[in-house]
Image: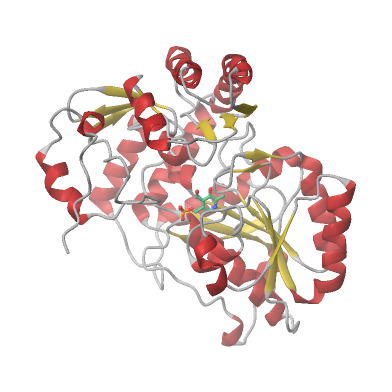
Length: 436
Ligand SMILES: Cc1ncc(COP(=O)(O)O)c(C=O)c1O
């Protein structure tokens, strides 16, 4: 049966959506969307800096940086040049049995930036897969050391680690978007973060009882992103480090959201002064240009796989792992972190967000306003009609995409003060006019 995506809110897509949108829309399945009721996507023809240009000529200021990937803004010339020159020379070769300069240089540079002996990089092609690899590393770490039965994980309420099966299973299935899959997924321990005495005692008791089964504790350090932009303090991570060590579990930091400056330091683990055993990176790794991810292990993890026994090898190898274009983009992005004042820009964005979002606290239906690094959040009691809210932002000339009960900004770090002011003004204006 042919069920077209409704283009009924054609004014959102523009007065006359381009032919490719009209003809192609019935053949794509959009992310996180009820296809029957979702607004049609906005037809984009060009991106530059913090601007998204639509097919009808409108230009939106981007508050999300494409799911917080485009940390240097879109189409940064340094990254573009790096990808173009790599494309002419070597776009991709398989990483099994072959190596190339961009991947090995990137591995060396990433490990030099990360703390302690987080020294061994396994490349993949998306955040979810990087998490799958981390989970497999943790399970096999125990197997290779002769520890049987360590096959489960501790993860946290409001946590989100991706959409693949293993990653969903360690995400918060009750609060999150994957509840329908609960019965089909392995059962892990979803705990409250140990942010007070009670939750610390509960987590400790659970580890005391089930420590023999637990391969690793996995957490998004400092900010739980897609599960609701929930912040916590560094001492939570110190507690997790202590508990992981006490109960013989590995500690995995999923820095796919927080990595590369988003919280104010280059990595959240560095800000918290806690070194995990495994860290996952993606998203801003290539500054939002190409899909690439990395799972990086400490030496003690790698050493458990180092053997004359082929059965102790890590059996994983995505076809496009260490893609040369992606690695070239990531190396160029690291150049920009080295040579341009990105973390100072994050600091300035943080201060501006705090000042300009604070008045939202007085608006009806606003439950909380919070800012960390270049993340600004206005939490509402509820959003009754998310489509109308999203469309109102487009009317204001901005791209802001609320989810759940959250309106948030994760702009590029190169956004100008004026552009950011347009975004925060739009939030204040749209939320003021909303019926709570
Ligand atoms: C913390 C975290 N982990 C994992 C993922 C999954 O990454 P991907 O969408 O690239 O699979 C995300 C994506 O939002 C994320 O924020």
